[in-house]
Each structure stands twice: as structure tokens, then as C-alpha cells.
Image (tube, rainbow, N blue to C red):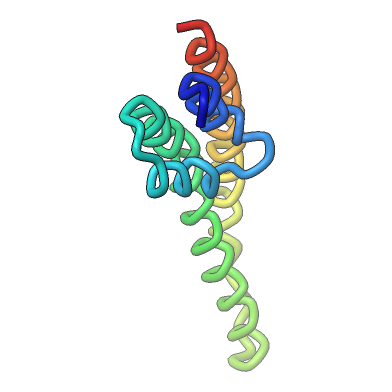
Length: 113
């Protein structure tokens, strides 16, 4: 680890190749304070889109379970989850795009300073 600034910037650029894994490994393995600080920030930025993604997965599971149960009960399944699914998908897409731009800018800034 000759150049801590370069490694610190890789935390942010890891959104392209290993989004959460790379900053987490560097956070646990690195002894340099600069690298650890940037690893924490990159990890927080990259975990931000995970919140609507988890909610989307739960909503999809609930909706699929209702459709499956409707086949056995003979009742028509409700499709009330469709709006929530669309909203969570859009929120996830916006947060993922924002995280990509934010990580790219922060990685360039970490290289320059």
C-alpha cells in the first residue's frame, strides 16, 4: 500500500466492479486512517440504494404469495402492490444513479487531494 490516496479512491470507484464488498474488505483490513475513512464513506454511499431494494424484494414476495394463495382459495388476487412496486423501482433507480455519480465525483476528489 504505497499510495493511500489511490487506494482510498478505489473505494469509491469500486461501485463499478465490487460495490459493497471492496470498501468493506478495505475497512476491515486496512490500518491507514485515510483509507478507513474513505472506505466508511464509500460503504455508506453504496449501501444507500439497498434500502429501497430490500423493500422492493419484500413487496414482490408478498405480492407473489398473494397470487399463489389465490389459486388455492379461489379468490381473485389483489394487485394493490403494483403501485408500490413501481414507486420502489423508480426510487431504487434514482438512488443507484445518484450513488454512481456521487462515488465517481468523490473518487476523483480523493485522487486530487
